[in-house]
Every structure is written in structure tokens, then in C-alpha cells.
Length: 292
Length: 266
Image (cartoon, rainbow over all chains, first blue to last red; front, side):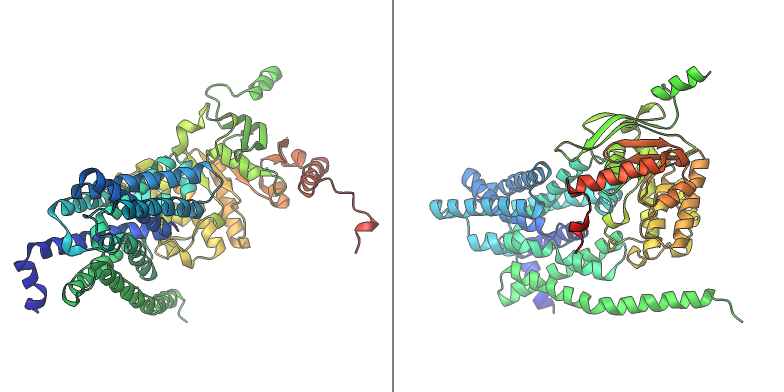
């Protein structure tokens, strides 16, 4: 056991760095996945993450390797903001807007890569993640953006809850809903950039949907949904990380397979939980019923 | 005396109480769907907005609440622009516009009514008391921990009303609060709205059932593209007004069709 799980951490710094990055991603993307799922915006994460390829390429061309994450963040914010803007100011709905913006940015990124062929970008790693290639700078960016997202969601929990359930009431009582939407897009961008190294562009979408969706099956409050999603995110990051280490898998697919298996577990448990709750409600009704 | 009274109804004097809408135009970007030259809802009265489907009553309510930005005109509450007192305005949306699979328990949703007072700060005893009182008023206190996805339609409406009551604002604006509810829930909701009015709140509701409105509203505003009539139910809901409002709207929706004749019979 120790040989399998502890020794690699003690012996190799890059393994430690990779594990920490995976855990941060597991927590942060799980929290955001809850908001995306309850707001029916699951594919927004997909869209922004694809657009990020353009940022990776441009950031690398401008500043070399250290430029990748800042470049990704800038393009994530720009694409997210332009999607929000186009949805608000045209008659085109969000799903179509997302399709237009992300395919364009993704195509532009691919085109530039095929022309310039930058030697420092391994397309496979950008797309599918490479936890063992996380540098100290990458880890700092991941940790900072992750912390930012967590603090904002925890401090603003009540606002996120109201805005997600009933944006009409939120607006009616004076919340600046438009500004809030841009803020949310910013958080999503930061999360995607934080996840880039661990699971890659293509698979980050799973981490931004599945933990929240699985947790929704088993909980009935937003707060407990978020806590359970975090547990699911952590479990899948941890197991995916070790699977990738020992079975020589790409880290992204390994983590995504783990989270998908946990979703299946939730799917199996959900009806059992429903039955238990129903039984408890019946008991309570019996208690209250008059005894003759 | 009568001259003074007449003048005071003309434009709301500063410090006047209640909701005063003047010359409002509301739509979805391409022109106004509804115009409202004038609408008054006094505290202490149950005011109902009625009119045909497509007549713009919900749109007007959304313009008043600020969900739609009016193209012109003003809305004042107690003599000051409503835009500066949003937390004092409780709004109850249509039930169908919410996602009832949202992970929340009954008490979580009622507690949202306290958001305007507390924002992100820790809730106080006053908040908890307001939530508990509202739950009790609508008769959902036994279901406080029930997931909202397990509620019936009538319970959902009562829950939304409890949230609006927990806000303890000066105005209560409701979009179809009686839509799809059972008789028991309807009685509970109406009694609470009347009590809120008696306690001095402005209560303005959109409703489509004229019989209920006749029975319970103190003041009725008939909306069909514009305000067609306003006054006590007996006057505002005269047969002439109803015919004008409802047939006018159906003609507008159907287009300039020929009057029904033998040729239309199958």
C-alpha cells in the first residue's frame, strides 16, 4: 500500500505537485458544477474550455511557457463575456451563441498551432491533461484561481442560491443580475484555467457537470449538494491520479472515468434514498395520526 | 373639499402613500406591449390587474417590478421612485417559471425572502422569526424540511407566498398567485392577501378569474394593451368594459377576421 500510494509522493516532487493540483481541481470544479447544473448551464463550461485553446496558443507565443495559463485566463474571460453579451443583446439563444463562439476560438487555436507548430505545446496534453507536467508556476496559478473561486462562492452563497433558483426575484429585490452573470462567467473561466493541467480542455467539462449532477441525485439542499459534490470531486481526482500514475494513463481520462463511475453509484443509490425518505415521512404521519 | 380630492388623485403628491404608476410603457424591445397612463394601488386595498391573455397584464407587472425596463414613464412607491426601494417590494413570480427540482427545502425558499434585508450577512433572530411566522401563516410549518420537488401545485404557490410575506415589504406584487391551486390553497392565499392589505401593505395581483376578482378585490384595473378601466369591481367590471377589453384583444390576436358567419361552420 505504502509503496503504491505514499512512496511516489515522498520520492518525487513533481508527483506531489500533480496530486495537489488534482485535488484543487476536484474541489473547485465540483463547487462550480453544482451551480452550472442547477442553472441548466452545463454546457457553458464546455464552451469556455474549448475557447481556451486559443488562449493557450496565444499565451505561449507571447510569453513562452509561463504565458500559457494567463493567456488561457484572458481568452476564457473574453469568450465567456462575449457569450453573455451576445445572449443579452441579440435574439440568438445561449446554446447557439456558445456553439458559435467556442468553435471559432477553438478553430483559430488549432489553425495557429498547425501553422506555427510551437514546440513547447503538446496538443495532446493541452486537450487531455498532464498532471505530472505541472510546474511550480502552474500550481501557483491553479491554487490562486481555485482559492478565489471558493472564497467568492462561500461568501456569496446566499446570493448564488437566490440567483440560481429565482433570477426574477433576485432582480426584483435589486440584485444587479447582469453584473452577477459576468462575475459567474469569470469564476467559471478561473476554474477552467485551474483545471487545465489536470484534466485538459476536452475533459474539464466532465468535472464541471458530473460531480454536481451526481450530488443532485442524493441531496435536497444546495449546501449539502455542494459538499457532496466536493467529496465526489476529491475522490475522483485522487483515484484518477493514482490510476494515471500506476497504469500509465493520461490523467484527464483517468479522472473522468473515476467521476463517471461515481455518478453510476449515485444513480444506483438515489432510488434507495428516496424510498428511505418516503418511509420516514410515513412514520412521521403515523405518529401524528390520532390513536383510537 | 371635492376640488382638493380631485386634485390629489391627479398626480401623486410627494409623501403620498401607495403605488403610483404614471404614463408607463413596457415591452420587449420592439415597441410597447402595454401602456399604462395611470394606475394607483393604495395601501389597505386589494388591487387586481385583470384582462385577456396577451393583454399585457403580466408585462405591466414586470415593468412595475423592474424585470423589464420601461420605455417611458414612472413608478413611485410612497412618493419615491420604486427603483430606489426594491428591497421593500416583494414579488411573487408565476410558479411555472421556477425549476421545482432545484435542491432546496421549503424553509430555504422562504428564507430567500430575507435576502433583501440581510444580503450576505448572518441571519438574525428577526429573520428566523419572520420565516417561521410566514411558514405558519401559509400552513406549511410541518413541511419546513420537505424538499420543494415533493410539493403539490397548491403547496408551491403557498410556499412562494410565504417567501413574499417573509420579506415584510411595503408592497406585495403577485403574478397569478392563484394559478393552478386547489380550493383550500386558494382560500388560504386570498385570506392572507386580504390580511396583508388590511395591515397596510400595497397588494397588487394579476389574476384571470373575474368571478374571484369581483368577490374579493377592492380595486380593479382592466388591462388590454392599455388601461381600459379602473375602479371598484362593480364599476370597472361592467359588461361594456369586459366586452371592449376581451373582444378587442381576441380580435387583435386573431387578426382582422371576418365576423363569424355560416361560412365558418364546418
